[in-house]
Length: 262
View 1: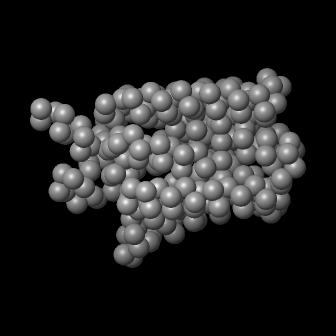
View 2: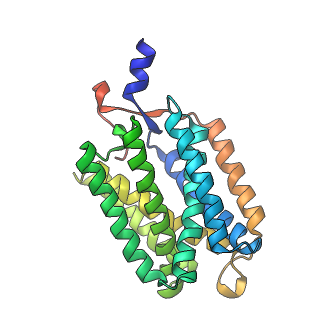
């Protein structure tokens, strides 16, 4: 009985720590390289790539929601699936449909904000500490899907259209994440808002890092194999999950004050 109560009070997502953010950046970078590997290196195209990764993402979300408690491997597999489908979907909208980076960023930003607003209006909280019910999980993963896709478009827009290049993109998004961290330590801004700001910003950072790794030298990249880069990132993620213990974010219902960045 006590275990069941504890499960109901525990969030289905991990506690936000430094390792959480390192894994998030690695996962978003993997999403970029793996998404490009399927759509470009395998020549399957953005539409087919999106269909493949969307299926995997929905399958992972279904297992994630059915799980009775937080499971690190399942959670991060779902995050990786969301980053890969976000990569191919953003590329399909921006390039194949001709919406362009600016149009894609604008549409996805509206969808992300609408998702957060509807989530908050429906359940009263968008904090990760409230992600302990199927309804909250659905909103959580929809929001993550929009944030990952937005981040891909934003990263490409910054590196390509804005002309900052991949190194410039890393500096811009790294600085913005630094500003969010500073706001966490030295201001009283809502931790939940800061969490989502950081969550969104890690995606374009991962996107420009991924592009920097696998794009041609003539385009400012390192021209590394998308397959080898993806394999190295995957090994890092798996080893980190196995070596560094992770626990679920404690719910407010436990009466403890959250200490993570949310």
